[in-house]
Amino acid sequence: QVQLQESGPGLVKPSQTLSLTCTVSGGSISSGSFYWSWIRQPAGKGLEWIGRTYTGGSPNYNPSLRSRVTVSVDTSKNQFSLKLSSVTAPDTAVYYCARGKILNGFDIWGQGTMVTVSS
Amino acid sequence: DIQMTQSPSSLSGSVGDRVTITCRASQGISNYLAWYQQRPGKVPKLLIYGASTLQSGVPSRFSGSGSGTDFTLTISSLQPEDVATYYCQKYNSAPLTFGGGTKVEIK
Image 1 (cartoon, rainbow over the protein chains, first blue to last red):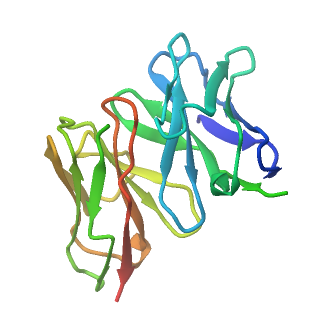
Image 2: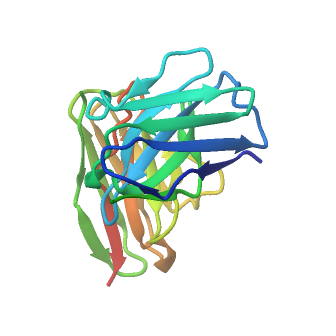
Image 3: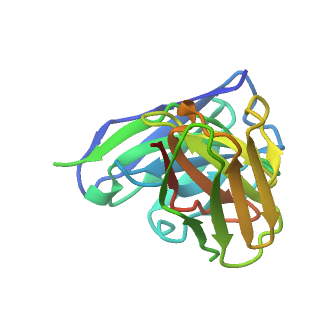
């Protein structure tokens, strides 16, 4: 049973970089059938896709965040990560990591982690 | 980039009602369309992928249809546990955009 778990600071100061890690357990992040994504949800609002990475492939990003975001994978730790630079209050949200299957959408999600941008 | 538009933004139905949610893509996406259910305070859950294939374990009262630009999610008999916000999402190519969501409530 594959599980995902987000980790990282719950509070980030404005203009700093938000850094989160998603640990994959119960399966290998190196499987070629999957991609690994970050999705966020501000309180009371909808889901926003941030970006995705594959092992051995180039990442893709939401155009609205592309200049500030990096999604990368560490196969040795079976983890993938999110870095979002120059954060401001609108970046406050629950951040989810999720596994995507090439033909199936996001079938496994982490529990989500709340990140607040505030001084 | 392709935009995903859901309608209505909210709806209210009685237990046992048939409920339909629509999702429209601004360009054709074949059948690369998924539907998710997010109950209040919970993590989104994949209901349907490939526009019409039910994810394992999802009750058969849920169904999806459509191809190209127009898609629907139908709940054949609304149940109290179906109170949730439902999202469509395209996944044919990046960006993997979500629709704005449809909040379903019980009258």
